[in-house]
Length: 354
Length: 239
Image (cartoon, rainbow over all chains, first blue to last red; front, side):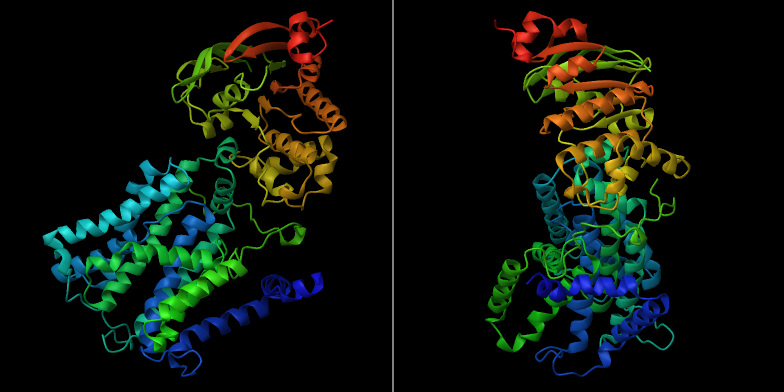
């Protein structure tokens, strides 16, 4: 039985295969999967196609967008254990930056992107600095409030379109041969995929170094982390700010594709759904979170032919899953024994947060 | 390195948990705070290490008032704590837990091997378990790890919160032997204990804490023979 279980444990077997693989095989596998991701819009497999909605649009939104946001939220919730229920606010700030600057100034997408990210990060600092002394449920309530405040302010500020939102957001300028138009979602998907890969690379580097260790310690025991000399407030704010930055990127890209935004797109449901992706996939495990986001974003589109009852089916699937696998589809590996050769943390000052 | 607490008051909300306590720990000493549940022992240690805010009073570390300093900075000064309930990072290996004890040391790379060796020498069990998850250790091993981790930062003053809690008698002996050994290497120790017998045998001086007040202060050996203390904390006085 135990043998059967370990054989079925694809996560551990996969991880083991990866750890034992020589470098060339890892590189080859990575290149293969990345190429596959870029090629998905060309695949016309009836299994993964989405009858009822345009497959290529679905790849960009919700699938690609959810994946990116879930990776960002995982830094906050999964790595450092801070329950953020207002994550959509940072997404909205990125989207609104793109919308306002894109329609009111002559700045293009690439110039607005860093501004949007910076504003999202700044709002992360502003929200995080006073609130991160709260713990657990209290933090969740405050962040939930923040998410709603951003939306309600947008609804009630006529200068940024009020409830009607902003229309006529420019698309990004053409990039070599890729033409960004409303008719073709493929370039947007590739753009989003490229950003996502960069973010994955960044997150993995951070997680393996000192910040990752500090977040680990904070999540497990905040008080003891302080006794170890970790400035826990600073690391928590940083987790918040990095998560906000990722959502900011997502918001800017999203607004440039969708052409018009309204405040009600950025409601509480989005925050909850992204959190569901993280929990469903396996909180704290990057690959689980990505898988969770893909499934949660894709499934409702795939079963769109069911029309109305599809949300019911989707909800039932969620409940069933969380009962069968309460730690998520691909949970973080529970380590009992550590192979000395796998000792992952590189004791280097690189990536240190000062 | 002298630790001096002057007229300390600490509140939990409106409840005053520490009501004007003064304690002195001289360099090289083992000083113990004994007292019943709820006397404020753990609160004292948490306040000294900075996890609880001070209402009023001073905490002097080598003459410098650190009562307003955040906890993580006090750790840098050489004040190290093995917290109540051990506070092991259960998802990290024993080695990773020990490395966390050095998190903020500037020369951590240079010091690491030497200090690991010292800790492994004191606690050979930790070396055997180095690559095992902290959560899989027994209670006694976790206590060793908590003390070992606290030593990794090369503390000048070590704060120990109930190191004997929940341990078997043999393990308690073992832990207290090691505490004495650590003290002999020049580390000043402030020890909070419910196991008054052991604590008083090992310490130089002792304070008896009752509902937030120091009711007695004496040489530890004197308190061992004090009828009132024996009756209240050693369970052997009422003859």
